[in-house]
Image (cartoon, rainbow, N blue to C red; front, side):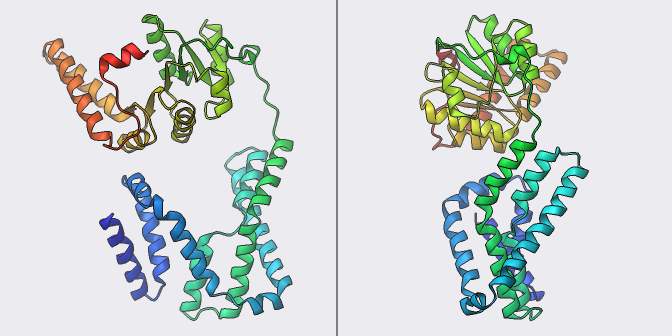
Length: 360
């Protein structure tokens, strides 16, 4: 945290020395820090203060606006807001279509990103401080940008309605239309029907553990059902669908998908519904694993660490080290990594190896 503050203050002071605003320098520092491996730790640290700091920022911006000037030029402000929104929306829609997004997705993206952002305030305040822009026109532009931001909730509803009208209806295969079983028996729920989810399901079958697979990819579900596996179509990030799948009676939730946002949303939804459920989740890297422990998983499995352990195991066995020693060493390293990644105040305790097998 101290290093983060030092970078932000240092960048702000450098920007001020160069004739720019300290706010612009701090903004640049934020962009730089967002690309580092420490971004999640920084997010967690500043999260309790984020709302307060945003409020202070907007309060500071508002103090630079003259209400009398705004009341005297309502049509100018409205014109600025409409012009800004139209220009940004058209540009974003064109770029989205250029990158081959569907028309519905491109339209929704353009509408949602059409309003102005906080960076406009930083630029305008910097321009006024540098005497590049007079206070009166800057106040009008600030008001226009603010108006687009205030209208964002209404624009979001409009964007969703337009997307639903333009979206091509999804035609599900017959296999994907089968609803989850309503007996709500005690079984594990595997989220993800890809290669990782298929392997997890095969291991559960091999050890006689009942389970179901859920995925939002209809083609994967259809293929799984044709192979005779208990797979069902749906969105695991939705609490209602998790209830439909029997989350209240589930023995475990195993999240195997590789979409980081979807993993987080699924874990949060499941942990809210079932505080004592065993949750094992796939993590992209060590930082993601730490985040998953904080939001309540019992075990997080980072892809990079597991790949390294398997490579080491294969190499050692190939070099003639007895398999028993290699397996014991791999387990020891895995437990060591887990202890390093799991914070002391994590909400869900990691289960011992034998306890994990008993709960399943």
